[in-house]
Image (spheres, rainbow, N blue to C red):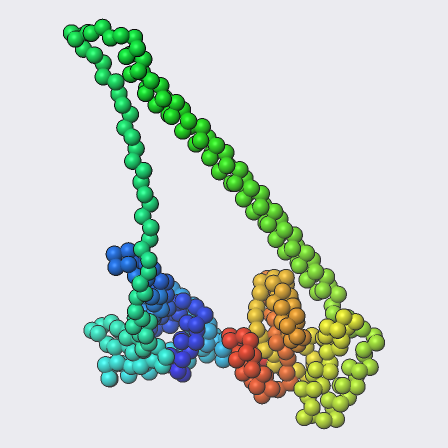
Amino acid sequence: MDLGRYIHQLLKHRNEVYVKGLGVFKRIHTPSVYDDRRGVYLPPVTYLEFDGKSTDGVDFIDYIQQSKQISRQAADADVHDAVLNLLENIKENGSASLNHLGQLIKHGPSLVFKAEDLSGFQLQPIEGAASPVPETMPVEEPVVAEEPEEEKLVEVPQEEVMVEQAPVQEYGQEILEEPQNTGKQKWYIWAAVIAIIIIAGLFYMNHTNNARLAAKRADSILNSQIIEPEETKEPSQDSTALNTVDSTNSAIATNNDSVATTTGKKVYNPLIPANHTYQIVIGTHGTLAQAYEQAESFNKAGIESVRVIPSNLAHNKKKVIWDSYETKEQADSALKYVRKHYVADAWHQKIK
């Protein structure tokens, strides 16, 4: 088993992968940030790390089980053998390479990981304009009138007293204007907050109603048991007869089993033909509404073979399949096309 290739493929979709017997491989991404001291934008960096003591992340054994369509015990045994071979190479040579990842180097009782791709660290920073510094307005200190000492009382004419009191009155008027402006700003802020709350409530109610309508529509489709129209039964029987005459045209007969409704959308009855033994799974969901939503997105794009396979029990996952096939060779050929152009983590499954 090529551990490096499988781990690299899984790290494209997950940030942490736990390999039993080795540790956790992590994909770290640091976004671009602005360095105020040097006045440049530091480039984003994506790199791999290895933690031999951690157990967090996606279980690598589960991924191997789904990819190879084998039992849990068989997948555990394959991973265990691959890890033992890797550790033996490290013990004999001091290091071992993992394809697409890097090297594991022995360092005392532990392992040190040396990443293969360090191109992200060779990027150069970009000069950027310095962030503007907000100007601070100087605050005038209030003028406090000094109380005259009792010993130096001097009679002052009334006109001079009025001149000294005039600036004090103007200052008091300026102080009273600031709370009024602040009060208006508070009202504007409260009005904006209330408007945002109302918009969020309307959006939530609209989203909830759409989800309920989608669930009701999914239940109605499931309860209808996908009945085939009577007018299109004869073409389906003719296509089945052609399938018995020429075995090489099995793929064409499979497409003829799906009949067209009055709206032009294909309906499969049954969902899986009796002579089909393999199917390609492109997604699993907890609810029928989510499964039908994914299937409809492919149907609208013109891929009418995508359909939902309901589960026997309510708590089981609902599968969305690309199509079903008679032989494993047909399923393998179609799986390569699906992974390349549509769903990278799709897998084929034997129909029970």
